[in-house]
Image (cartoon, rainbow, N blue to C red; front, side, top):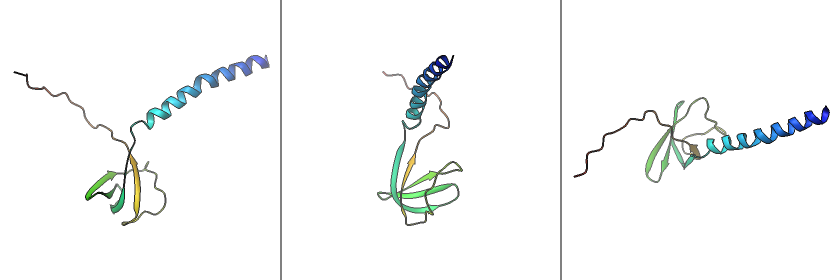
Length: 95
């Protein structure tokens, strides 16, 4: 009986591990990064200078921040894009 339980646990682990690895890979598939000095930081956003342009990224309660970040600090922000709305658009007919 113990052998059957061990075999079942091994089989279960062998089936679950690939699912966990796949989910992890999908979660990080479309991650981007912007690096630059902080121009402004609020409770809901952070703005950095990328090249000569300001980039504002929204942050929320789930955003992990390492340390006490202040204006002027150079930071690397990892972010992903999420669609708010998607609508079809009728394309003009080709002549």
